[in-house]
Each structure stands twice: as structure tokens, then as C-alpha cells.
Image (cartoon, rainbow, N blue to C red; front, top):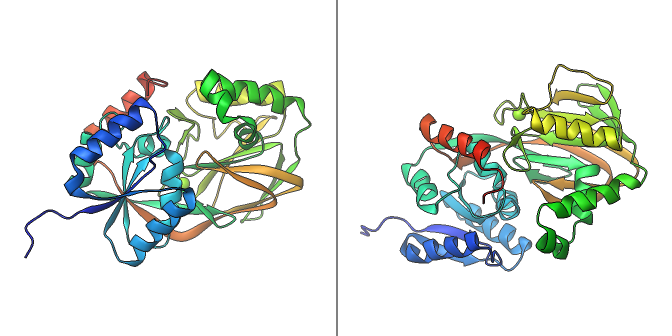
Length: 314
Ligand SMILES: [Mg+2]
């Protein structure tokens, strides 16, 4: 009988060439006896591998990467009993922040997995594509679509601002939103939150709870300067106020919703551009995702504070 601790399947995005990515790789190699390491060549391969591990009945799969890698692994694990371990090595690590998973040093993230505490997180899908943190229709997805890799490398976060000014010059789509309970709304852009955080450490969805079986939805009704003003005000004030039903923003909670547009609109899930569609359906997968997270509220609080103090540090 083996006396060795189990080897966890670990899916790794080897393309992460940042300083953080290099440090992560060093940590993983130094603890290589703890993992069965799979460097993935593409998103599809990450999905496929995660699905295979789930089918083989693995207790845990670790995703080492940013929110994009994480989203691929989640797609593979969706509907299974296999739990997700997170090694946050990306730039934003929004989901790790949401769950209070340490993203400063992988030793700390590994400790969370070794402690063995996990939580159940609602798993929603957009046109069949699962997501755990958030999604966007229209403006923010289009900004992601317009931001090139070259521009990001050259200008950093400013690249998104340049893309945004370009997107705002074009006429916005008209989005018709119908919640599953029959409520109807109309807007030019939509943000959908399972968790509370958006784009890093910003708690945008004030009422969001990723275990309440509801999506928090922010509908922006006006484009141009007002859209930018509403988004920034929401981010600066620590969330969009669910009760302020102003003329330009509406906040609703729904178990599911459909969005239709006369033209194809871009959609992002977990910060990754998904593509374009005219009919977009958000609904629960009927399953939860098991995620290893700190049990200790003090650890969670520590990373909650870190996320306020160091927005762009990593
Ligand atoms: Mg919720």
C-alpha cells in the first residue's frame, strides 16, 4: 500500500510568461511529486482534460492560471462531483479573490487545498457555456473584443480605455431582457454577476451571493458618457446600489434571463470573449461547483483587505 500523499491532476497554461507565471512554474516544479502536471496547448484541450479527470472520478483537479484557464477547467468539470482547486497565477484572479483564495503566494493556495475545506458555488451557463463569476453582453464584451494583444502589451490596462473610446463612438445595440419570472427590461449593455466582484477587486454586484441560486443583473440603459459615468460611479462606490432605480441603471436579481438583440452582440463569460449572438440565454446548470476555499474567516478577510489595498499590484 502506498504511503505517499495523492498526486493531484494539475492543468497548467504554459503560455503565462509574466513574472508571476514564472514564479508559479517554479513552485509547481519544486513540488512536482504532489501533482500530475498537464501543460495544456489550448482552451479546448484544457476542457477535454478536465472532463476526462471528472469522468475518471478524480476528487480534485487544480487549475493553475488566470480566469481564462479557470473558466476552461470549469467547463470540463461542470456537472461532475470533482472539486476545483485554484492556483491563481493570472493578472486579475477575480474568482480567487471572490472565494478568498490566496493569490500572493502559491504556498498559501496549496495550504487551502491541503486543509480540504470546500464550498459549493452556483454554476450558471450562458448559451451552454458555464461561468462562475460573471458575464457581460454588449459594451464590456465589445471592449474585450476590440482590445488587441499588442495593445495590451504596449499600454497595459490603458489599452481597454482606448478600446472603450472606440466602442462608444459606434451606435449601441438595443438589448431586450426578459427574466424567467416575466419581468422585462431594455438596455444597451448588461452585466451579469454570480459573485460580487467585477474586473479585479471591484465589488460591483452589491447583493450578489454565489450560493443563492440567483444571478445579479445590471442593465445599463444609456450609452456614451452616461454609461461610462454609471459604470465608474458603481466601481468607485463599491457597487451599484440595488435600490436606486435611476433612469440610466437598473439592478435586478433573477434565476435566469434571456437577452435578444436585432444585431449580433458580443458576449464575455468570466472575462473571456465568448463570441457574438442575437439570442442569449442565461440559466442555472442545476448543479453547483465544489471549490476548495479557506475555511478560516481571518484568511478570507486578509485577502478581502488585500484586494482593496492593491488593485493593480499583481
Ligand atoms: Mg447569486
